[in-house]
Length: 67
Image 1 (cartoon, helix red, strand yellow):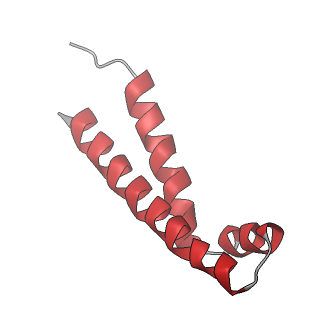
Image 2 (cartoon, rainbow, N blue to C red):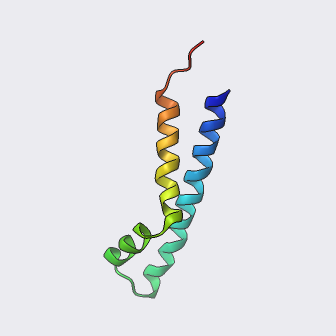
Image 3 (cartoon, rainbow, N blue to C red):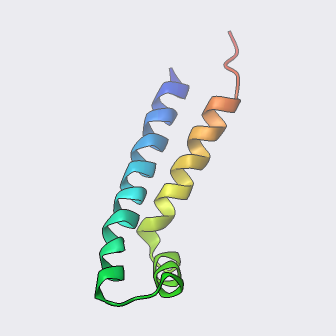
């Protein structure tokens, strides 16, 4: 049951993180280059939620539940 809860937490964190990454794509339309965009999102804390969420999901999926 704990693995399901951790999976949902990881899924929620990754959704929030990728939502911000997609929202920040609007900065490309105002003249930022790809390099400047990647530098910008690497400095934003909420974009790290996507990486943390994917890490939690991968741990839960690869970890086998003891029965």
